Length: 153
Image (cartoon, rainbow, N blue to C red; front, side, top):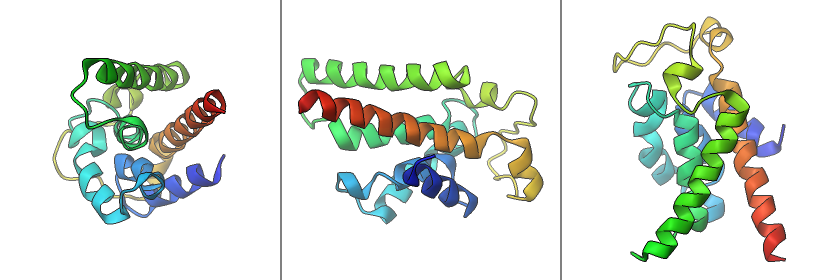
C-alpha cells in the first residue's frame, strides 16, 4: 500500500465518504484546496448520494483525473482523449474488483438507499469492502500517473 492509499483509507475512517477520501489525497497536487475538493466530492459517496450507482471511489478517481489531465476546452478531440483515459481507469478498477457499481461491489451487504448514512462502527468496516476499494482506486490512479509520466520522459 502506498502512502496516499493509506492516507485515503484514514480519511474514510475519519468519516469522509469514499469519493472524498480518494479525491482528498490528490486534490492539492493538482491545484485544488482540500475544503473545495471535499465539497465537490460530497455528493458522490455511496454510489452517488447513496443511490448505489457508480462507486464513489471510482468517481473520486475520475475527479482526480479531471484535475490532472482535463482541459477546459470544448474540443471534441480533447474530450475524446480524456474519456478514453476515464474508460481505461474504469476498466482497471473493474478488472480488479469485478464492477464499478456500488450495489454490485456491496453484494451480500445491506445496501439501503436511504439518504441517511450508516453509522460508522467496527461492524460497518468489517462487513463492507469500502476501505479496500478506496485504497484500490488510489493505487490504480497512482499507477496510471506513473505510466503517463514515463511516456512523457
